[in-house]
Amino acid sequence: MKALLKLHGLTLAGLLLAANAGLLLYLGAGEIKSWAEINWMDVAGEGGTCLILCGWLIMLLSGRPAGWVTRLLSLGLCCIAFSMWMDSLDEFIRLPQETVWDNWLETAPMPLGMLLLTLGMYHLQQEQRAISAQMRKREHLQRDHRLFDKLTPLSGAQYLRQHLQQALQQARAEHQPLSLVAIDLDDFSLVNQRYGQAEGDQVLQVVAQLLLFNLRQQDMLCRLAGDRFVAVLPNTGEQQALSIAAELRQSIASLAHRSQRHGERLQLRATVAAVMALDDDEEQLLKRLNLTLARAKPRLAHSA
Ligand SMILES: Nc1nc2c(ncn2[C@@H]2O[C@H](COP(=O)(O)OP(=O)(O)OP(=O)(O)O)[C@@H](O)[C@H]2O)c(=O)[nH]1
Image (cartoon, rainbow, N blue to C red; front, side, top):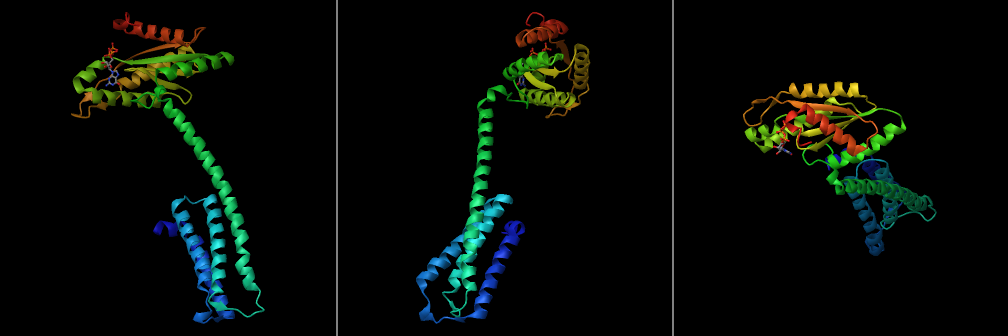
């Protein structure tokens, strides 16, 4: 209730003031009817509608975020509720026959309220459409979750291939160089053996974040598999890619990661490789990158 008053106090106060002013006007100009003169059927119909509209207003204001659509809908409801309130007042108070202003107060807010409600409904529909479009997009993304790595906030190998294909096309169309950098942790299996799989997961997440921090806005980082990461560097020649790769290796070597259980410092190292795209397609380029990495890691030379 506190939050409701804080956000919509003005609207509610406006309605209360208008209803009070209407009551005072009626009391000032007319006289109270006797019990027998009151038509209770009309009181139930008009007063009940007014109460229900006030209930709708409270539900609307407490259920929706403040904003343009909420304002239109609430003002519409206020106008209609006020009209019903004025309509029910004449069940209790008799005005002189020649009075005309009561008719205005009863009927004029009704079409205005309807108009505001209609405008609000229109914008609500637009808002709902935009939300539905967002939901569909998100659903599509979730359905395509195979493209995303389960452990780190990075994309996986499948997405890398798709992205690389497009990036190569764009680089050729724009006559710009494109390079790839691979980063492979050294002896990562030892981290799993010594500290456990959960600590290994933690290390992979920290390294993914570290690499992201050290790359540029336009670069795209993926986890190719296990402890191997690949960055796609648009508009980047081989020399620049080599120096970026060296920086990434250095950042991993300087990382002061401590194990979660005993707080021991883990000394991480990585082997890096960089290749620039020539005439090859994405598969050939990735193969060349893996071969270059394998050469930098003599023990992997047979498995690449
Ligand atoms: N914790 C964890 N370990 C993983 C994950 N994916 C792969 N691994 C482990 O990563 C290790 C990769 O092994 P290797 O390719 O031999 O790499 P390495 O031990 O770093 O050896 P070198 O690359 O030759 O230095 C294996 O022990 C895998 O079990 C993962 O998501 N989480």
